Length: 376
Image (cartoon, rainbow, N blue to C red; front, side):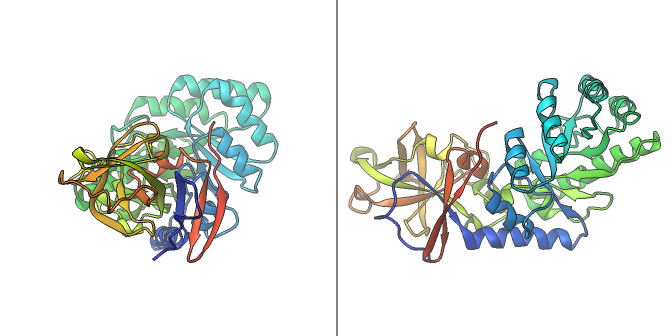
């Protein structure tokens, strides 16, 4: 049980449970160590140096970022091996080159022949090497090149001779739509088989493929084989969230992130409790909507973090949250008096975290503040 901070904080406030964070990170490290595959944690969820150190179990190490601002922030704090895992565009190459010239071993990602040609031209003109991983589409979810496509070889033919082919990477985002553990494991197999096929085809064409990178929290934790894979990227596992709990990847009690909010009023005839935690604090993410249990905009806990069964955030305006019983029953105003502090477990840890500038870190009776690096 955690301390009740009702009288000592202003809300909304982002809480981070340190023991849960440590346990979640240890779970991932232990799982991947058992498969002899490297971990390159994705820092886009936490955007925090302190959290990343716990994820790595070390002061520094290889990381994945989603913005160049993250890359610059982490590089300035001692991180040298950085994968910028969003498709590169010409307008960002100078910024990436500045990191490289400062000593950062930054790697880029692309999935088009146009981007490959632009990168090769830039590196030749600037006399610099910015290796790129080719993004592979292994699940039809988002971006990437099909592992059996001619386009993959066309991109390899541009990057390889220029010494810019850093490897291949993929993200099995469709695993988030799974209905069972078996579904997640099937996506994990498809992810691994697709990325390994892409690497083998490039090697058969005469190219070195040093990095074969996969990554999503569900497939990382539930994958049964990483043969042919060199590294795993994942991020949300550090905190977990209600989507991960709905997939069976974690338990609700593993979720390390929550938003503290205060009751500010009631709508008695509707059975609603109104709080100061709207979507500006929680985000608009409704990732559990298609799962067996829809958690609305978040699951409600008391001030110490204990789940209040059957109570969710049913609606969210900019600065107002609407809390109600899942079954439609009325909530008693006497149970939720004005001024009572509650905590909301998020649907999507990345989206909720992005609404805040930092964490109030809870460790038994002790608290501290950790910075987040937001923006681009």
